[in-house]
Amino acid sequence: MPRAEQPALFRNVASWLRPGGLFLAALGSGTDDVHTTWLGAPMFFGSHPPQVNRELLGLAGFTLLVDEVVTMAEPEDPATFHWVIGTV
Image (cartoon, rainbow, N blue to C red):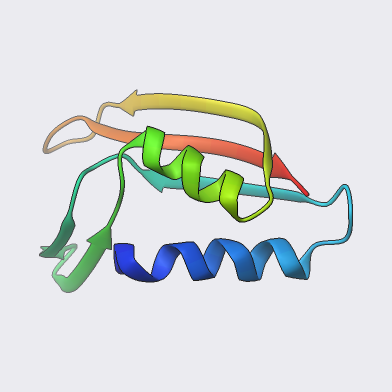
């Protein structure tokens, strides 16, 4: 999802959850929108650095219970994700 659309998505998700509901996400940790090919198909990845993710989630009404940046070994290159569990 394009980075510009992510704040509205987070607000929507927060509105769908009951009080105390949980949101689990593996967010990107990059700084841009990327168009590429992955597994032979055209792909789009949009991500913010973890600090921006935290700010956007907080503005959407989430309190983060888990907030971890994890780098995983993948065949091509390491991939870093921002794992969060938040509650409203």
